[in-house]
Length: 141
Image (cartoon, rainbow, N blue to C red; front, side, top):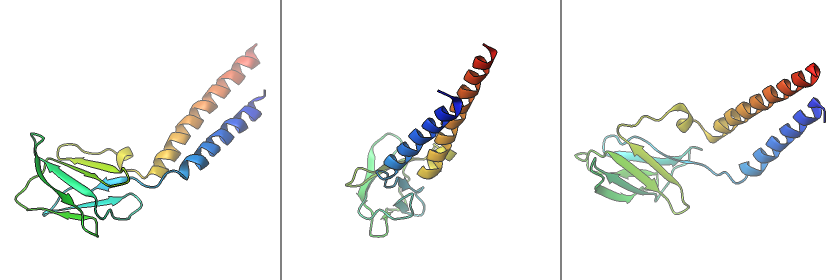
């Protein structure tokens, strides 16, 4: 099998994977940092999560307050409470978590489409290097 045909097959496989998995992907739940007695629960497509369950924990892992987000995806709590960890879930299985001392990296905050393209680029780059290396070996033999 020649190099050009191999590359086309690999590209087609990745396109099919992208097409088939994109229809199953809805959105990812996000949880903003609690501020001024409120925490916003939403999704990475910009929609809010009304009715999402929110549980706040202290540093010892004890529940300090829990409840549901309102129709705007906002959960309000007493401003004297200082949550260390906040977990939010909804009825469809989405889950988001925020912890006071943990900063999220770029990939955790990036939208799913951007993470998919980045992963696809890495795999394509590795496939191209492999095909180049095999073609160079074949030329030397």
